[in-house]
Amino acid sequence: MRIDFNRPPFVGKETEYIRQAVESNRMICGDGPFTKKCSAWMKEKFHTREALLTTSCTHALEMAAYLARIQPGDEVIMPSYTFVSTADAFVLRGATCVFVDIHPETMNIDETKIEDAITEKTKAIVPVHYAGVSCAMDEIMAIAEKHHLKVIEDAAQGVNAWYKGRALGTIGDFGCYSFHETKNYSMGEGGALFFQNEEYLEKAEILREKGTNRSKFFRGQIDKYTWVDYGSSYLPSDMNAAYLWAQLEEAEKINQKRLSIWNFYHEELKPLADRGLIEQPFIPEYASHNAHMYYIKVKNLETRTKLLEELKQQGILSVFHYVPLHSSEAGRKFGRFHGEDIYTTRESERLMRLPMYYSLSLEEAAEVVKALYRFFLKSE
Image (cartoon, rainbow, N blue to C red; front, top):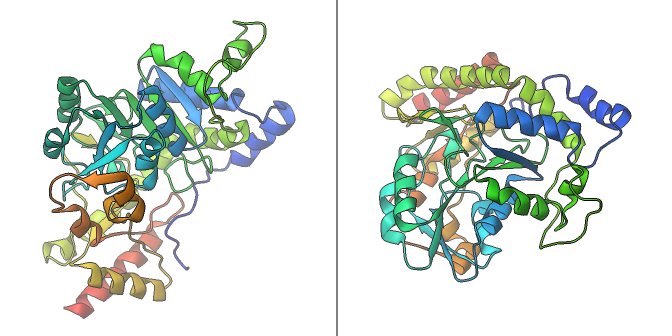
């Protein structure tokens, strides 16, 4: 492709820091100096009591499901328009996913549909902050409090995005971040788990360290570590954390560059939206987004298919996104859709994502815009 859909972010010091982890620190396993730097940075930046780096957002979600004590037979409410990890984390605990419809404007869960989906088996709500745009968290938290439910934020796309001045991932009982190579800040594969209740810390550390109390040992709290509970290997290498640290140091620079691309797309494509040829993203007043993606919506699936192919022929890779989970084989096996699917499937078939990454130049973004104009003006 002449213009890729995504390229992993790289700011310049990543290689130096990885070399430092290997040669100077001589520690490439988990919880080394770079892991600690990243965790401390997130705790200060996002005002969260705890921030544990994990091997992926998938694993952060799995840890949250375990810490929230999700059991076989429980039900968990979430949107169907999300990545499979959102559901997998709870299916692994034996829970049933209950999908509800989304807002067509934001592609986020429709908070007005949640309460009707609650049963005596419901244990948690999982809002997914699509494209780094916050769900209506005040309403969701009020519903959760009323029905004594846990809230687990899937903020995979929401790093450095905010809801009424609060960082996404810090509002619910648990928040889960992704640092996959497609995200704003990357460590290749990686994630983070946030929570505010210190009572979860010891169990979370044990869970992350293969069921051992190794974290206490390294802090000098015990003279040896042993197997004490269920656990797995959710702790990333310090080399991965070294790569991430280089980007967290430049987090604002990355954020501003992505916002400049997002704003460029938004302004340049507005005439197409004004003519009813596309729909643009909607940002609610309560949300401060992070320019995780720029998407447009076209008339229907047929139009999207033709447009994606034409862009590809011009060397521009643009892609669609999720196939709604409830329409998949596993979705039908492990979950159910509550209420009517008014928007989830329809909107998912119209949405396509434009190239968006830190190293994308405005000149390249302008080429994408020109290609869109050529397609739509030809189609009129």
